[in-house]
Image (cartoon, rainbow, N blue to C red; front, side):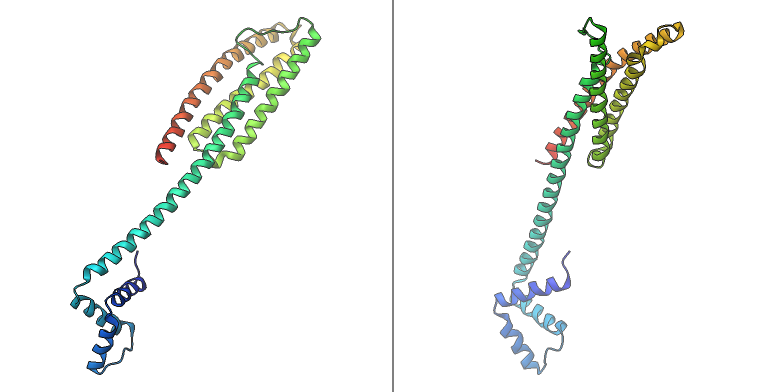
Length: 232
C-alpha cells in the first residue's frame, strides 16, 4: 500500500520531469509567501501538475510502482513456495525409501509366498534371528524418521505412513513372541493353538501391509503431481 511519503516522492519526480520546480518557486515569490510546510509545497506542486496536463504521467508512475511492488511480492512468494516444495519432496522421498526397506524386511517375518529355509534347525534359528534383528532395526529407523520429519509433511500422509508403521511393529512383536520363542508352546495345547492363530493373522497382515503400501504410494504420486502443477 502506498504511503504519504511515497506519494510525495512521485509528485516531486513528476515536477522535476517537467521543470516545474522553477514554476513553484515563482508562484510563491509572486504571492510573497515562503514554504513553511510540506503541505504548502504539495498544494502548489499539485496545481502545477494539473495545469501542465500531466496527471496521466503521475498516474502512470503510480501504476508502474504498484506493478513493480506486486511483481516483487509475487517473486518472493514463488521462491518461498518452491523452497517449501523442495523440502517436502526430499522429506517424502526419504520416508518413502525407509518405508519400503522396513516393509521388505518385515515381509520375511511372515512371508505369504514361497520361502526357502535351511533344513538344519540351528541354521534356521540363526536365520530367524537375523530376519528379526533386521526388521526391528528398519522399523525403528522408520519410526524415528517419521517422528523427526513430521512437521515437514502433510498430516494425512503422515497418518498413512504411521498406520503402516504400526502394522510393521505388530509383525515384529508377533515374530518375537510366536516364532523366536516357539519352544515354550510345545507342551501346552492351548498355547499351540493360539500360536497358530496368531501366525495365521500375521500372514493376513502381510497382505494388508502390501495393499496399504500400494494405496499410500498412489496418494503420494497424486500429491507430488499436484504440487508440481502448482509450482509451474
